[in-house]
Amino acid sequence: MLERLPGQEKTQDVTGVGYFGVVYNAALTITVVLAFIMIVIGGIEYMTSFANPGAKGEATKRITGALTGLVLALVSWLILNTINPALVNPKLGLTQVTSPTGGAGGAGAGTFDQNTAKNYLENTGQYHNVSVKNGAVLEGVKVGTLDAVLSLADACAACFLQVTDATNPNVDHDPNAGHPQGEAVDVSLNPGINDYITGSVNANDGKFRRMPPSGEKKYERYLDTKTGAVWMKENDHWDVKVR
Image 1: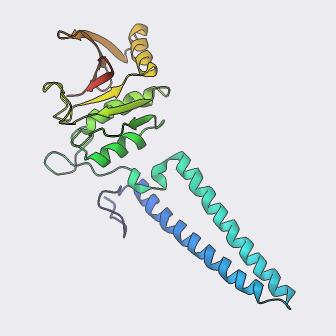
Image 2: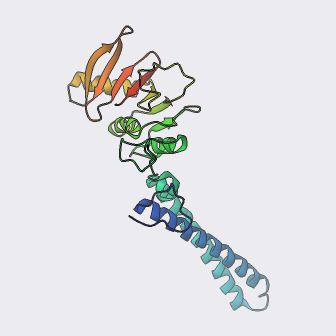
Image 3: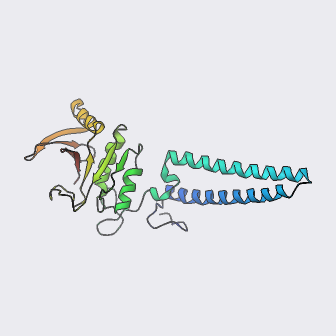
């Protein structure tokens, strides 16, 4: 187990990504501060070297070098942020997951608080094609429930998934639907998801299987064979349930 670096928060990743993010941000801060100091020193030297062309040239080089360093630092940040935002912001990396008993939970075993769940959904996976609707309540949602959403997001680059709710007590969820227990989330309907799930069933590729419709309302239901999640197509959203 890696030890936390000075200044690294308890909820931040203490694996390689978290370490890299903390070290990189410290180095970037030092680089920017030193560059500004060099620009100030160079400026003073330039203004006080009227009768000394050599000193004026050295001051110009100092300022140019500092500006070059700033540009390189900015370019490195842009590149790393494009590759993976967690590399330059360790708070978006793998965060500690608390289980219902308060310990560290494994994949699918623990629960997330509101902010951790939102970061996990929006900053995990290769496509970053998941968003959380403003006002959605995710407090207490289980890790495995969110993993089911992320699994489909990774399998379908053209699927843009918006999670609209999970555990909001003010929403009239069926008590048996799994929402109060953190075992279900709602995802907005959109053509990408609809086509992917039904296309998988029609192609018989083994990724999704059609299930018997639900109860009286006869909602369409599909089983994700990889995660075991049931995707139920309601009137205005997908209900994604994992047990």
